[in-house]
Length: 99
Image 1 (cartoon, rainbow, N blue to C red):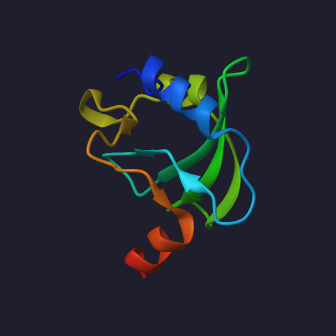
Image 2: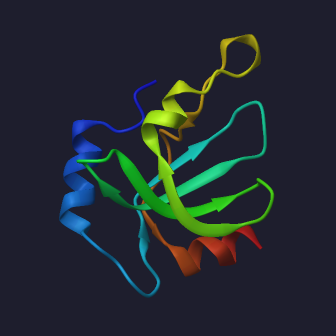
């Protein structure tokens, strides 16, 4: 699956850099594991997102490479997926829903 579409690139460009309580534009997840990546920013030149990562060693804000995520191969041919049903949401609201 292509994680970043033309439409997502355009939306990230419209949203731009964000500070307090950012808008989460896209959600990526590992269908064979616990990792979830909530993207709030995207750099088209480096193909790197910035956002909140959960389900790995510990939850944190940081950068993650879309190129590397698209290269991950999980059991049974699974790959990192983009949540096609995810709707943009403010980070604080998302955390209140998930707590």
